[in-house]
Length: 401
Image (cartoon, rainbow, N blue to C red; front, side, top):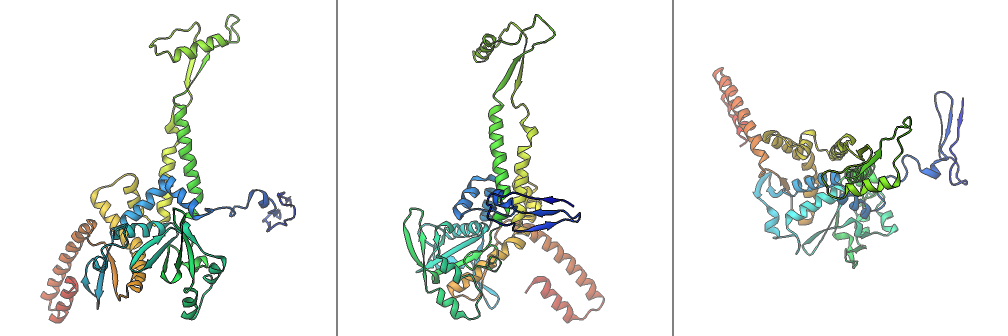
């Protein structure tokens, strides 16, 4: 049995945990005070710090822009009694959400902020904006009020009567109403324990972001050193007539390398080596692709779609992969958005659709082929004497009328 002590910086702190392994050894966590535990100091210190990392990290930015570009193409249709009554409903409600953006811009921004954890929609006098998370200034008391469950709608109505401060990028401050604020979370506020702010998947990618930045910095440094060379004289200690390179010869070689001549002569044999001669061997490009895959996987982007981002693929495979990704990954986000839009616009049934996008043609071909097989099977059933009412019902199901 052994004892393992980690001496910490704060001598007033007791170990925050003590462990004993199967061999009977004891482990104390006092060193956490100096270096931090494995779960401490992880994650972004602020919303602005998170945005700075997103905008400076190629892998993360590429994934978030892909999500936003795809999502921005959604159309919001109006239904009544389960029947489509108006396509692109929002454009009849209002030509644009605000003076600066189109609806497409607003959807793009919705998905971008949502990927970062939270999207804050503010609607006042039929003007719609998504607020920048780093500009929100909630008081500790407001955060506390939004950190509990309630069993009466009165509690929510009461705290929504208040106001909060919002700081614009030009440093001006607006006082806004909670009643006009609609919060969308990538992960439910029930997970974070606060209805004002949900958790962010990006926090789990914090170390990936740091490693990716180091890899990019490393590549830049190594590229710089591919232009530099080491030159040394070939000195043999056993040869008494051979002498190490002196300062004069060293200066002569350095000057001759920069003189632009095609041929340079030296008195003694020299050896020249590039400081970094095989940058590919460092695997920095592979490290970027690995980071891209990690980030994409975190956001539910399947391998076939990742290949579109990193390698490209055939048209049919690309369209099918994109269609499945939208159906299984993005449509739940669209549903979350339209549920809230129904409340804002006092509508009963708004639905998002991507049916106008090209990938649907690939699925339509599959649908036609499947329908052909069903009709052939139905014809055989009819010839075998299946009741006509059953045949008619099945035809309605096949042609969806």
